Length: 538
Ligand code: HEM
Image (cartoon, rainbow, N blue to C red; front, top):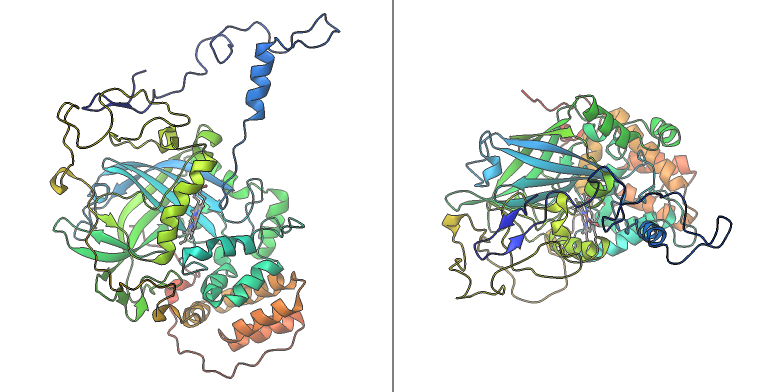
């Protein structure tokens, strides 16, 4: 069972493929000592007191006592699967990443999740779903950490703790466990109108998917791609399910939560076991990389905005197939650690302020969740590309490093090159102009419009989908105790659509608020409706 990588410096990184456990025909202690009995503790006589000297008893109980690790601070409930991604080659004009080349096959691990509920909460609650993909590429690991809703509640990551505190259960009652039906959630979003677009999606059928297999996925932020010639484009990533986009009715979702709280987890596992491998096509909307970073007047750095597909069609660039269930839920789905900063040559970041806070947050939280700085050595997190880093020691270190001390420049390490160049496939950040050199705590003026896209979304839905949105607002707001919160949210809805507002107000038995401002003109985008939505996978 050889170590994975020996670097030119003699450094040994990575650990043996399997941990030294579950080997041989006999039950042993963690030290490999054969056991003859694991059912009785050592006692002073059959009816006597238990003896402290029983190391097997203490080892077994102590390890059990520490079996749990903290659940994720968000997206705690989820399920994952292994698969492959095959590039079509159609992205080559905009992106040099090797895994997008024609016919290139790359192993992947995907984890789907709800956001708010705890690890043991039910699957079919009304919530945004996570859709996180780890591509184990030859050039290093690329993580696309997205959601099934293409926009986000906030425009700046500094507000993430606020929205999550507001959305999680009330601190005194721990109610509700996993739904958006409570005062603090509605208090936050009604006071914070940049959330309105996400809230509309959240009250739509998209937030009660029928299956993980029938969800779209979105990278949300705009990313920057780089081609072989060093030219850049701005893109938004989309996952299109070959199974079509389908949701549950709210009544179905509620029943299923009682009958089978593991509905989505079971569905994914059973489909893969049965050989019905779910597939998604990866696509990109491509925009010119202009200094303004806008497209058709839409600010591409604002994560509360979409670009309608009618203005920028989604171009397919590869196919994902999930074809293998995890062997061990804990080792794979629980221990997997995604990070938006895991990039490969050809994929770069933009200055979206939500994205920048995420770049800090994931590694920081994983240091606690996974117990120190070496969780990249866990089997599910190991890159498939060779690793030759200068990271040493620390809790749970499993590599036995050799060679010279890790520093650069270093004349004692056997001639290992100090740096690789672009020609050697190194990652080089694209030089970007920083427009403002004044230190400020403010949002750009172009982030100020909070209402035209929620209105665009509502007007793009079919009548039955609009009815579902109205009923969802009425149901969820109906759970609030605070009258003032409901009334404030109704005033927000009045700025989106008069009928939406009046029907929800009537459903809640409250007066319809007046809005005497002008509502923006919007051109509906049929692609935002789920009705008849089936991505052509030819
Ligand atoms: C976890 C998506 C915004 C902090 C996750 C996961 C997904 C996700 C899919 C689950 C990963 C998994 O399956 O293990 C998104 C999207 C966002 C967003 C699409 C916005 C576009 C943010 C922001 C922050 C944040 C702004 C903080 C500033 C976290 C943290 C976790 C997490 C701390 C838990 C990670 C772990 O314990 O491994 N996010 N997120 N997210 N997200 Fe986000």
